Amino acid sequence: MSVHKEIKREIRRAKLSYKRKLEDMLSNNNMGSAWDSIRSMVGLTDNVKKRVSLDGFTSDLVLAQELNKFYSRFDVYFFNNEIMTLRNTSLESKQCFSPFFDEYSVVKTFKHCKIRTSAGPDNISSRLLSNCAVQLGPIFNYIFNLSLSQQKVPNLWKQSTIVPVGKFKHPKSLNDFRPIALTSLVMKSLEKLIKAELLKTTEHRLDPLQFAYRTKRGVQDATITLLNYICKHLDSPNNHVRLMFVDFSSAFNTIQPHLLIQRLRDNFGLKGSIVGWILDFLTGRTQRVRVNGKFSDLTVTSTGSPQGCVLSPLLYILYTNDCCSSFENRHILKFADDTVIVSLLNSTETSHGPVIDYFLKWCQESFLSLNVLKTKDMCIDFRRVQPSPDTIVIDGQTVESVESYKYLGTFLDNKLTFKKNTDSIHKKSQQRLFCLRKLSKFQVDSTLMILFNRSFIESIITFSFVCWFQSLRVKERNLLNKVVSVSSKIIGLPQETLQDLYEKQLFKKANSILTDFSHPLYLQFQFLPSGSLLRLPFAKTNRFKHSFVPSAVSLLNARRVR
Image (cartoon, rainbow, N blue to C red):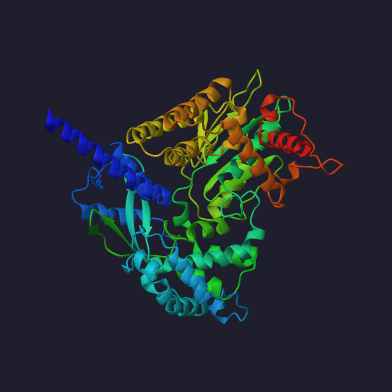
């Protein structure tokens, strides 16, 4: 009996010690290590490193070689003459837009390197850059400025080690592996500095319906803009909406450098060294694939920008900036490579119309390839008599019509009930509540349990909250409120209600839009002649009444009256 008591005593001591370690991590805002510790506490740790494998390949080396060929499959066009002409023009140009990097900005960038980031082919670790930033800053500041002035990127900095990551648990084809490029961390730091300068110069000329890399904008803005188009149009009788969610095949890997440079010059007015540097950055890149420690041969490519490079998303945005709809009641919303074509149709229309032909032609001219199997079409129609919508055929393949689609992390359904989105959130929340219960058994301090709840449970529920919460039915709303109620009981303290959280986020987002003149929804907020209150949009249906703009106007007016 004494042995049994001693074992239980030691278990309690071990739990107490582990609890203190976890509390220190949470107190120091070390969320990565804290989450690893929590997974260990609740038995979710997977110490076995998953091997990359695919049926039909006899060895890791053979698979690596085939993946390398597959990832460079878009490098089939030869524009050497165009690239050479652009390079010579850039070198001869006397007008130079050359970001000047100082030691302070380089040191600051090095210090912000994440310790856990994997090193690139040059084997320079993030820990070295972070800890020795002051010593390395002056040296690399000189090298960075030299690279920009000579419009030349060192070959080692253009080399990528591609690590295939499975998109699914059991990959069945080469396309089921996502190519993640490990590049030099020194190069990533230089890319961050270049990106900051590019954004300053190009932001005011970006398409208003491109929401990525915009100040004070994100996926939430893209979703509420899309829903505002839909709900406002459906507020009139006999109207309906069609959405085509476009999926590109390896979007970043299909960028043609010579087209990008031409568009940077024509659309954004960029000239000189920055243009030549980007051209050299994208051409003559070398890559190899690593599979379970085995490396493929090096391949040279001059097409695309690798996934994993800091500049890749921004360059893609600039590359696709001129893809805009000029057709009435047709809009093209973009968040990086996530694109949706919105067609606001009346009673006599059944198809997207010429906007699809325009979009397909633009993609062809830009060498972008559509993945028709993953491209989906959705019709939102509340009329009693609904004629069958016209099918969309692309390259001989019919685009599938769906009832729901996950757009930027939020499930949209053709009835705008958000039931599937709520069910998905509820399922994830239940898994996290299990972790919260485990923490309670470890007797973790209630303050830190509240922090865990806000970071890992509340954040799931309130993702893109202002887009859909007010539109929920009572059943779905009660389902989420129950999660808050259970977490409050586990913690032992009442947590903030979802309605309060919603109003906070709604108020914050509305004020953000009111100060952003280029936001697509800015003109939806109009002040009355008095100048103190906003004009409330007239809504015939609860669908539009409960959408973002009318809800935000009502809340802002209510708080102004107080």
